Image 1 (cartoon, protein in one colour):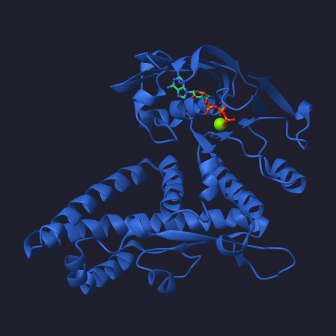
Image 2 (cartoon, rainbow, N blue to C red; image 1 turned 45 degrees about the horizontal axis):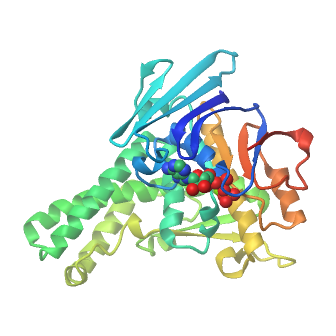
Image 3 (cartoon, rainbow, N blue to C red; image 1 turned 180 degrees about the horizontal axis):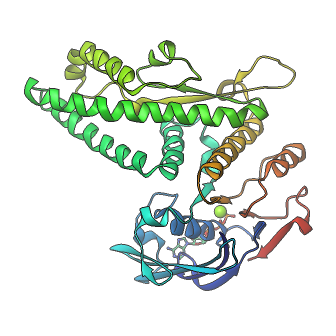
Length: 359
Ligand SMILES: Nc1ncnc2c1ncn2[C@@H]1O[C@H](COP(=O)(O)OP(=O)(O)OP(=O)(O)O)[C@@H](O)[C@H]1O
Ligand SMILES: [Mg+2]
């Protein structure tokens, strides 16, 4: 299924505007402040139910308005048209699919979108929260169960930290520990599963993802590229929590678990044969290309697993890349629908290969 037409009403700077897209590559060209990022944000919101900038509904409404309408028309593989609508108000969102109300998990069975934003360029050297978000975004699109367990885990973590702040009395401790262990082990095993899958794709660029779970010793006792078993991970978590109980009470916070996971990307640099930690050694341009490839691996994996190819949205990706890196980037674009933005036509993108939309 591909996005054919979009109508935005009262969304950000767009009062009322129609856009038409092609099935292949689309390029939105416009000067700074012309609404390129807002357009991609609207498409992402339609697909994932939230803004990639993680802000309130009220900021998405055009200034001094109280309701926005986003309408999208798709073509499926048989050529039939499907329509998705979103009514957005300060207090909530209402989605309809072919004129019938639909929930987000049900919508996720029809289509999805992945976005690449300038802030993702901090993925390697920015805070670990960004890297965990990458795992969580990918797994949540792949599996509604992961999404559900992640939100349950976050709830348990908040409750457990509140319990530690109140002195961590024995009685409730057992309950919160077991919940944390059960859900935490699930998330760790799923992230390990994703690491394995992405590494199979990243290998073609000689890139390698290293998963650094919390507690760190897990990555020493379990095979880096193998399956990790829920029961074994859970029993290690249980042991470690037991050892840490006094320290946790003292510091009044949970000290291990997937909320402290991280990952490192390894890759080739220059003529060196040995793979290098790209956070420590890669230049900004090299990091940028590696991050884009990580996102492409994410897309390729999801595309193989889901019944549809998620639409790829690329915001302002070409700036800062030299011609060779721009060329490498264009060469790695997937043959599917993608919508990208730029201030000017990137020299390595032939105008005949893209549908150009000028703002
Ligand atoms: N809620 C809103 N209502 C009206 N206008 C808004 C709202 N939120 C943002 N804007 C305006 O929308 C305009 C376009 O912003 P956007 O980020 O999409 O530009 P852009 O084309 O991506 O620019 P750049 O090339 O600098 O990234 C900005 O001038 C911004 O002030
Ligand atoms: Mg922008």
